[in-house]
Image 1: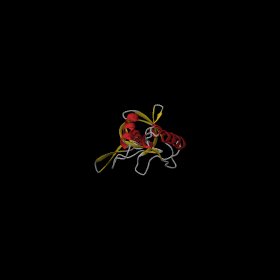
Image 2 (image 1 turned 90 degrees about the horizontal axis):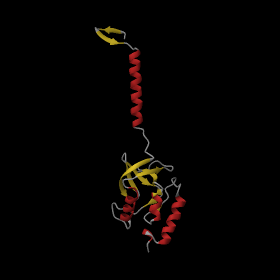
Image 3 (image 1 turned 30 degrees about the vertical axis):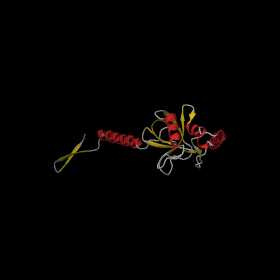
Image 4 (image 1 turned 45 degrees about the vertical axis):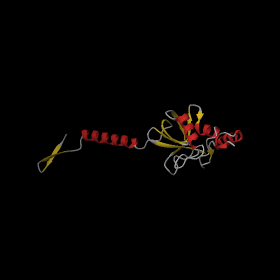
Length: 165
């Protein structure tokens, strides 16, 4: 490495070694940059069920189910809110889920918007089929809207859950 001095201090000049060091620094920077830019997963473990239509998955992401709305448990317990929560727990808690995006990535609260599947069970649809969720369109995310509406009509006709007479 070539060295020259200024006022008695030795300063290195650019050399082959410093080019390698710069290259390593760029690679390290790009690697760190990609860590902060990771996309939400397509599959994940459910670590917490918040209510009938919201979960938290590994990585701390909150996921809101698309196309449905379940009775609330917060701030006030609504009729069938507890049953919707329990059904959602039974379906997904502690399980690996597949998350399917429609058009939108997140809602105004920053929650991921997804259709949720456990193996072959379409969780959003199962909650509707059991009469524990209302179908609610959230355009532009309407991929399964007609299917969910069909299940809601069947649950209503059968008097299941929220449709009990």
